[in-house]
Image (spheres, rainbow, N blue to C red):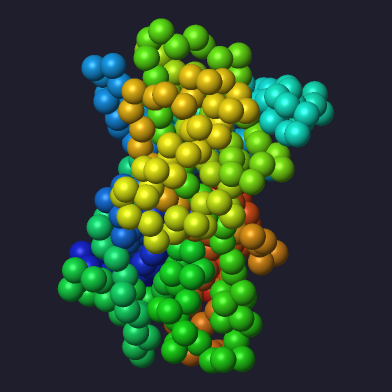
Length: 358
């Protein structure tokens, strides 16, 4: 029966992926009275809502190497942002970014100004907030799915096996497709949609500078028409008492794709190259950090979205087991898109189960 607690490895719903979409979906399903289990392959939560803790001038400081900020356009997401502002988890960072194009560095057009929100403790704190009431198993990579008569059987790389009556997959389509290819009939539109999903990679470079470094006049720079650099942000400007500049750079998709299979020495060389490129076009001090780290995002942003906030089907067809797909390939790569996809995935699954929210 749905809602009755039994085996900790069984649930009414298993959500694969503890990014924003998966966590938002799981919370809404939990609120509807379902037993929900979230499985996440990484040690941390939030997907690209990611923060590293680094040693900088003798202190441990958070640095956001994934999503740099969030904005709110839809009513529902704006209400959630307002709630987080009230809790002190979010604060407004800036309303105006800078733009770097062939004409040089300039403030963005006034029509593009909008509130950009950040988490002073690091963006991953938002994921931890979402996950607080949930049962989440981290470092649990799903390697196999089996549809039985009345349940999904989910096999993890660590040998654990989990069961649930319904499944939500909130991971990048290229990671999901191998798990589902033999479960979905070739004619099913979901299979073709997942197969057509393409993602852009991104190489993120984190760099810290000395106390003598002059504070720059910008907080975040959108780089247009640049073959190497897509974004440069002054991460230390997000923190209550910054020690000295800490900068995060995001490489462009084409340039980042050159390093998808690179080892540590090549990645370090690429990071130095990106810093030197930024220094040439902005400030010379960018080329000489006191420390540097590089992170590779293989599935940074979808090239295009599927046009639906979530996708639901049954395996096998007709009266089979519910499966809902959610994530950035559905509603877009922004935090708001992931949040909307998670909300819609929960709504879709509840309708498939014939239930409603309490």
